Length: 253
Image (cartoon, rainbow, N blue to C red; front, side, top):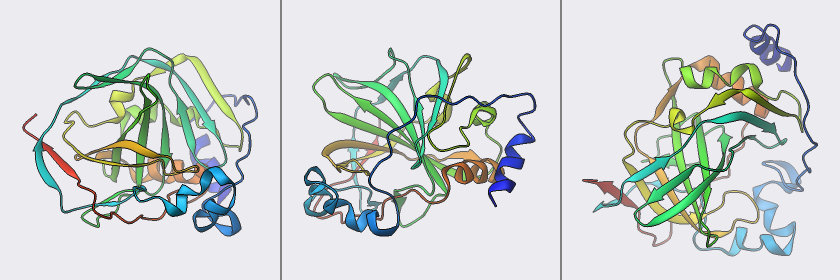
């Protein structure tokens, strides 16, 4: 199966030479086995909240409350493609200078993480992939904007990534001559669902503002297959309990 994925990528990457970046530190957790999600809380004292937390992510988005909310202003600039295969996901680093503005609050865009399948569901509907755009404010507060990916037409923006996907664990590919804008991996309509949750990886820190974009972005079946093949399978945390949290349905922005 691995040969199939590499072969498919190679068909679109003639003449491209892979280069390996700095070795990523291997995490002591995974998405399966003895150090999978059910055991994250046992892998270090900092991870205790993965089990005891009351505001964990991901969750199913349903039973939302309509609300007039601030628009998401994605003040993103282009950045050189910088992708790392960290054994758990494909991570895209983003150079400094881009930000997410929500009202008076500004968050610096730090990068994006690819998940197959999408970690969040909407009214129990699943999606084969999502891209989580990670942001941090100067006060340390975190905000994650999620593009839900559905199967459909080929996505021209992600086509730019294909020749540069890091196929091997701990491989980093940065190309100073190939640029990407995170906005191109989001829908133009930024209507969203919002709730307060946590990081979906250890240490599962809470207090994270989640913005789930309502309109999915389309990738072709082959594009989804290629990315999942490089990731090596599923890398989604199981669904967490919603509890009494309110999920806002942003309208009338």
